[in-house]
Image 1 (tube, rainbow, N blue to C red):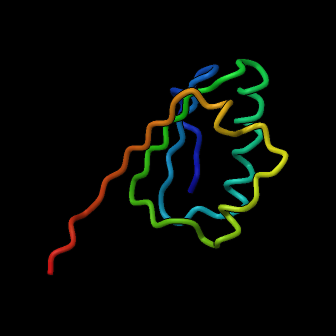
Image 2: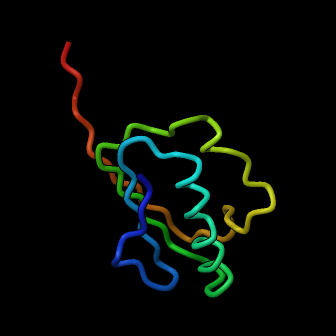
Length: 88
């Protein structure tokens, strides 16, 4: 699941990623990024990964050619996750 956090405002967007993220969920989020970049120029991103299992398909990471989101449009990115330690 890829969901916008309710605390998101203006140029600061937070997303919670959990389980397997699908290409459809990712594509539904991209217009929000474009809107924020158009309105504010640069944005700050928070990715909160809780029980995140990765992308459902390699296509979810896909080609972003032509998107507004790039290194020049993102001011800061914070990624937070919870990991379980593997015991051998």
